[in-house]
Length: 212
Image 1 (cartoon, rainbow, N blue to C red):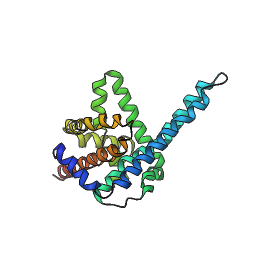
Image 2: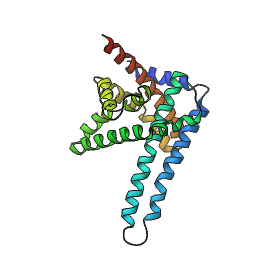
Image 3: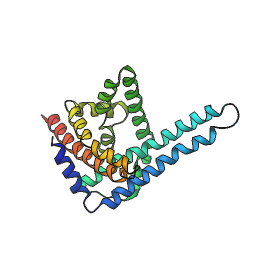
Image 4: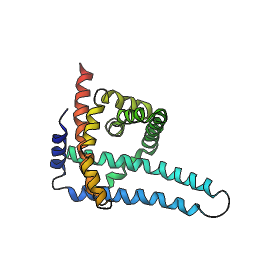
C-alpha cells in the first residue's frame, strides 16, 4: 500500500484537467441529496398520522437515493482508470437498482447494529465494509452478503491504513466548513479519488494473494 501523501498526489494527478466535471458531479449529488430531505417536511404539519407518513416518506427517499450515493463513490474510480466521464455515470446505480440498493442497505444496517454495541465496533465495521461499493462495480456477480464479505477480506489488516488516509483530510474538512460547505464541492472529488486509488492498490494486493 502507498503512503497517504502519495495517495493525495495521485488523486491530484488523476483530477488534473478534470476538476470541472469532478466538482459538477459532487455539486449535482449534493443538490439532489438535499432535496430528498425537504419533502418530508410537507408531512410534518396537519392531522394525526402526519409523523407516520413523514417517517415512511423519509425512508422511501433514503432507499431511493442509495444507488445515487453508490454512483458518486464509483464515479471517481473512473478518473483513476481514465474511463468515460459523462455525468450520466452518476446514475449508473439505477441500472441495477435492487442489487445496489439492498447491498448498501445491508451495509448500513450491519454498521448500525454493531454501533449499538459500542461506537468503536461500529467504526471498525464501517471500515471493514468500506470497499463494498467498488466491489459491486467490479464484480457484477457479487451482491448482498457476498460483496460485503469480499470487502471484509480485502480490508483485513488495512482498516487502519484507510482510517489514516481519511484522518489526513481532517484539515481540509474544517476548511470546507469555514466556506459554509462550498469547499466540499472540491473536497469530495479529492477525497474520493484518493480513496479510489487506495482501492486499486488494495484490489491488486488481494488479487495477488488469491492467485498464490
